[in-house]
Length: 172
Image (cartoon, rainbow, N blue to C red; front, side, top):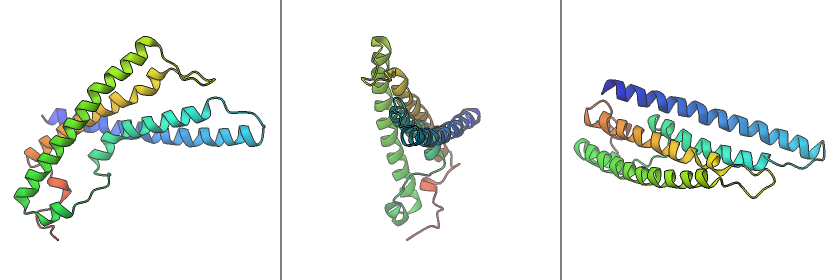
């Protein structure tokens, strides 16, 4: 189990690096687009679409890293009011619901991606980007997010992590 947990956490770290790189590349492409349009007076063909797809990819691919580091917005009013035992129960329920949602999205996004792959769909713009490339980050990100939820549930079940990252003495 330790190897599985370490492997998934490593994948989540890598996904965070990839998401960061996609955001930085998007910023550079926006700067290039501004230069091309403002200074060279040329039209942009691929930049807007690329940035849109890259930021969506960063969102999905970076999600496991955000979950692992607890970087998401968290309203912990209810967990702070609950005794430790009920915090654990609440954390399990919340994690299993989130895992179920991510699994449904993962399975459905594979079908969505596969359809774009076999039909060779393209965008309707001049760039004509292949949509399977744009859709691929959704099943990848959701698959990794499912794995990270499983690791979080295992860490909670074995006492490695406290529910919601709160210490037992943290109270309202």
